Amino acid sequence: MDTSPITRALFDEVMMPNYDPAEIIPVRGDGSRLWDQVNRDYIDFAGGIAVNILGHNHPKLVEALDEQARKLWHISNLFVNEPALKLAKRLCELTFAERVFFANSGAEANEAALKLARRYSADHNGPDKREIIAFKPSFHGRTLFTVTIGGQEKYTEGFGPLPPGITHVPFNDLPAFTDTISDITCAVILEPVLGESGVVCATIEFLEGVRRLCNMKKALLIFDEVQTGNSRTGHLYAYMGYGVIPDILTTAKGLGGGFPISAMMTTSAIAASLSPGSHGTTYGGNPLACAVAGAALELLSDPALQSGVLRKHDIFMDGLHRINKRFKIFRELRGKGLLLGCELDKEWHGHSRNFVKVALKEGLLVLLAGPNVIRLAPSLIIPDKVINEGLQRFERAIISFTSQYAPYAPPSSHS
Image (cartoon, rainbow, N blue to C red; front, side, top):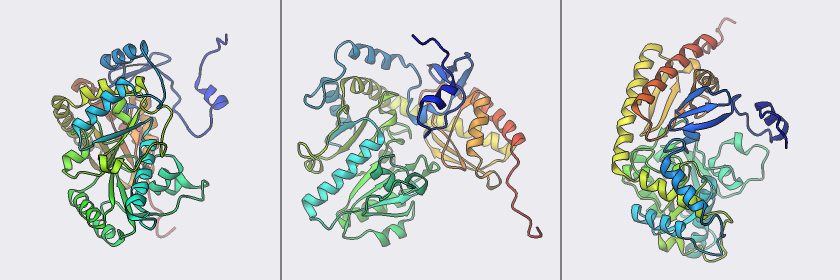
């Protein structure tokens, strides 16, 4: 048996180079804290990219996993299983949906939603109504279809030819969307709050206008709530806070509290287009994932937890505004619930990745959302005391960051 130490250098020897992970290796988590191989502690404001929605090692999730692991792990989609049926039933009870399809990731849920939209349009409108409208900037996954929908060249470069029939318009730009949607549009997909692309919230006027125009043009409206779902914004799903109901909704990340699972939800009339054999997944809806997600959903759908998210939002924003009043490095602080974005001032643009690295050295995990935005997506039940301690580390990170990196200065007109 190989007893050699596991180090970060081993990544470069054995793993594909498509990631550039941090130098530390976390080995243990509890609540909103992590510990690395040398037992140094970190406060987690990143949440595994908005996945560990109930923190690390939550006892209810551990209990659900342990109980199911002793019964049944996997049986494939040749059979139904009790945890999947219970979870689907509960999701239908809590949302507009009447039918659920389970997969393993947000990209898979979005892929299923987009395929369903085109299949539904083919069934009801014929072969010419195939266009899908998406918004720039956005992010919907890493499959070839979803990365094309996202429309960001940095994710599509070198992977062409890309799927056709996709049109992009600027996010939150209702006039541009009005000019673009047409009788050949079969579906529109959007994030109620842009996650990877800067934590930008859709306006209510934009969402209401998109919904109205989709109705007029008989186009399906898909909400990608992979990141905004599961009470992240203070509502079980963000559409509930906006009062705009989509035709199809996708969810993942926090749904399993850290266990891989996703879902695509819709009405029974739309779901009918996915006839037997038209789409599938080997692992989707497996008993282990659904048992854990069922336990997570029970906690996440609690109104007390959701009101706590809104209260903790205020604690974070008050602290961030106080810090920014002192250091003045953020142009804007924004977001909903516990999905928060801190946009660096113009002179610090391009430095978000450097900030994340500096924060790690101060014992704090944060995320970026593009080159100019620091993103926070902590556990929804992070204790107030840990929020305040994390904000102290955030403040120390700013001090270290501003001392290490000179603000951007445009070249002189005389040079």
